[in-house]
Every structure is written in structure tokens, then in C-alpha cells.
Length: 179
Length: 179
DNA sequence: CGATACATGTAAGAAGTTACATGATTGT
DNA sequence: ACAATCATGTAACTTCTTACATGTATCG
Image (cartoon, rainbow over all chains, first blue to last red; front, side):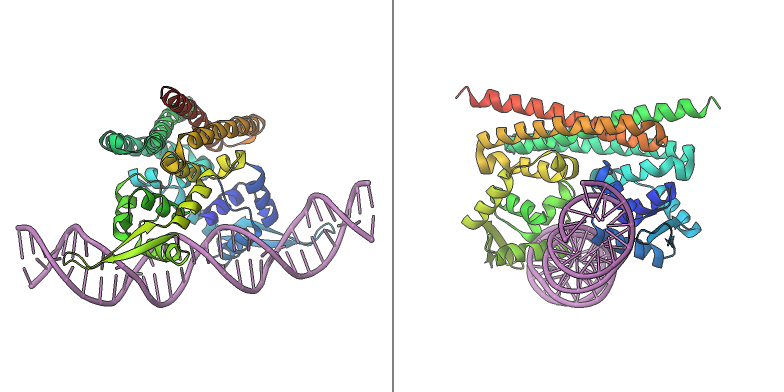
């Protein structure tokens, strides 16, 4: 997953390992590693797979920077990941990954694909939420109070996702037509 | 982290590796592994550290079950984890772990500790949310639409957490006094 | 007899964590 | 001289994933 995060960031703008680390430490980009021991090996792997290409900048006197950019093969891999289908189980267990994908989506795959993603997201939530609520109803009585509250926290979170999705869908719909 | 999840579940009720796996597959317990290759080795590690103790049930004819229960040392480790202090960075990057902790909290550490947790959680959110909003304000204009929406999704999620926390605090306050 | 549920495990490989190592440049 | 910032990397260790291996009992 870190690999895809890097690929997505490099697609927005070529960068060095150091630059990427700073993005993870200094911005609210959902908890990715930030440690050199994760990022440099990940970049190396991407390079070995020819998804990115690194060029050493012997430039302005400082220690050499190695700036990476996404190759055509990297573009294709990124697009494939971003547009792969998903369902309720992914919403339940991999929400972070889905949001990461979404963050890159319109730049890489266009607004039509972004809208499709959102509709699929909404549908998956509408399938998942009832099963969560059912579980809660069935087991609430037999659970310790904090366990029940933790589950309710989850439900509330997914409800917030649903509201967000509907607003985001409106946003893309109103933006597509006028042009 | 899986180790603590197992410890918490075993504290509620002694169980076998198989039982624990089912809990992860069949309930909405936030994405833990469910695979035997993760759970059995994790149980072994807990046993090696003497935090749990396994007893083979040669019982009723089926293949042998190994039922684990938490030792006094395990209880202590669990309590320590559950009650360790946390701040805004934890809320930002380890929300799942915090919710897992909360789910076990009142059974293991009591209602007073649970209330302290919630107040600390609320305080951490109140510190973190403004920095998120500031970041959003500063960078929104220069971000692609889906990137901005993904960030807004995060903000909305944390706002929902805040509301939940305040309701949960009320719940524990009204339950403590009457007795 | 084959599928399914019960039940525990291992082996190979991938990836992350922590900590260390290195080295240049700029500011004090 | 020394600290901070820029910049890249490795090594040891831990843990998770995927896939396989094994074995019993029940149901149709």
C-alpha cells in the first residue's frame, strides 16, 4: 500500500525520498510510515519494477538528490489500482485504502471515474451499514458498555461517510454538466 | 497490536485460536487478521511471555482444542496498555488502536478509567481538529478536487468522533452518580 | 463418498519498525 | 566548532500474508 501512496504522490509531482517523507510527516496523509527504513526500500522496489524512474540531481552543491517520476508502466499500474472494483468488505476493512485511492482519483482517471467510484462507495456503504446495525441490535444487550459504545462509534462513522459520499456525488454531478 | 486484541478478548472469555479467528471473521472487530498464520503464532508469543496460558482440552472426541486464558501478568500488561496516556498524534494516526482499547476499557479498568479515557480523547480531538482545519484552509485551493474532498472526509470523521465522545461522556457521568 | 465444519499448525516471502551510519551545507 | 537541515541508505528484528499440510467428525 505504501508503494501506491508513493506512486500517487509522484504522479502529482516528481520528488525525492526526502520530499516524500516530509509529506508523510507534515501533512495529514493517513498514517504512512514516514521512516527512511520504509520509504527508501519502497522506492527501490518501485524502481525495480520500472514503475518509477529515479534521476540523480548532482545539482546545486548539496548532497545528491534522487528525484523519482512515474513511468508509463507506473501510470498504468496506478490507474489499474485506482479503478479496481470494490465492495462492502472493502468498506468494512480497508476504508483507509479506499480514501487514499479517492484522493488521487480525479487527477489520474478523470471525473467520470471519480463519480463511478463514489457511487460504488455509496452502494457498498448501503450494503454494509445494515449488517453493522443488525449486529449491534442483536448483541448490544450482551456487551459491556464500552464495547457497545465502540461499535456505535463505528456505525456513526459509517453514517458520516454516507453523508459525505452523497455531498461529493452532488459536487461532481454539478461540475460535469455545466461544461 | 493483534496481541493486545487477543489479550482483550481472552480476558472477556477464555477461548481457542479457532474461536478467536471466528470473532475476527464474523464480527465487525476492526480489521484484524483472521488468518491462522497470524493468530496461532501470536498466541504462541503471548504464551512464551506468560501473558496467557493454554490448556489442551482432550474432551469430547473432536480434535484437541487448546483453550487460552489470561494470566495475572497478562492482566497487568493489558491494563497498562489500556490506561497508557495518549495525545493528538495518536488520534491522528492510531484511531483504530484507541477504539480497540476503549472497547475493552470498562471491563478491565473500570468506569472511572473509561471516563478519563474519554475526556483525554475529547481533549486530543480538540487539539487535533483545528490543525486539520487549518491545513485544509491553507491548501484547499491548490489541491485537486478529490484530494480536497478526501481531506474533508477526514475532518468530518473527526467531528463525528467528537460528538460521539461527548455523548459517551454523558453516558458514563449519568451512570456513575446515581449509585 | 465427498463436502463442510471443527481445529491447529508451518514455511516462504514481503514489508514495516527501530536504530544506526554517512555525508554535505548553512547558520551561529 | 557544533547544531540543524538536507539527503540517502542499511541491518536486525518483528510481524503479517499466502499457501500449504494435517487430522477428526458429521451430514447428506
